[in-house]
View 1: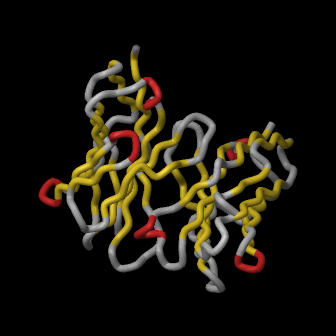
View 2: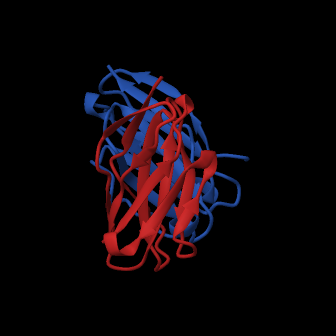
Length: 116
Length: 114
């Protein structure tokens, strides 16, 4: 697609429920990143996918968080048993093959998650 | 390891005044440097980037930034602030070894006063 698409744009869920956030990167971009932006905070790296390589999961805050990327394209970030501290904006970004550090990332508009 | 420090989480300027947003980086290797802007309820948009060509980089909306190796800085400036410049600005760094990850600062919120 023309840009990075994220859905839903807003999600309100009850504490303890599972949620799935979707990211559709720019066509042809093989690198995909998830970040979390909490209120008043910077960007917290969560996970990075590059092609068919094993993802870099070093930023996932707990084992309640997981992500997958099917067919090298669409990615889903899953949060199990949501907690109130999970409330944040979840941003997805993509970049050309091996080029994120040079070209920079293209970001989606984010999913605002509110856990009540 | 790479990191950036953005001095001042909030900056206020009057409309028409100079905008200066500060970014200092830490990198053991020559860096690539980026400035992103985030308007309310939107994702981040690339403003400009330094990739070891000219040290003075011009971006969109009359923003520019100068890479100063001696000061390990990459401050963002704009000669005359517009109301539409009100947003959050993020500085980011990666290294020139080909690594893909960008490391972001904590952001500076710019307010423009009429």
